[in-house]
Image (cartoon, rainbow, N blue to C red; front, side):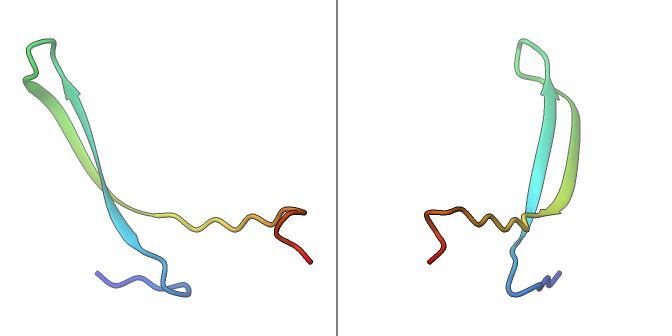
Length: 45
């Protein structure tokens, strides 16, 4: 799947619940996007 809001990347996040022996009890996979803009005094001119 393509994604673009000025070339943002699309990632797969995998969430797993495992027991103490490491056996997978539940898994959920989601497509996520990080779109964050941060402007600080150090970045400005």
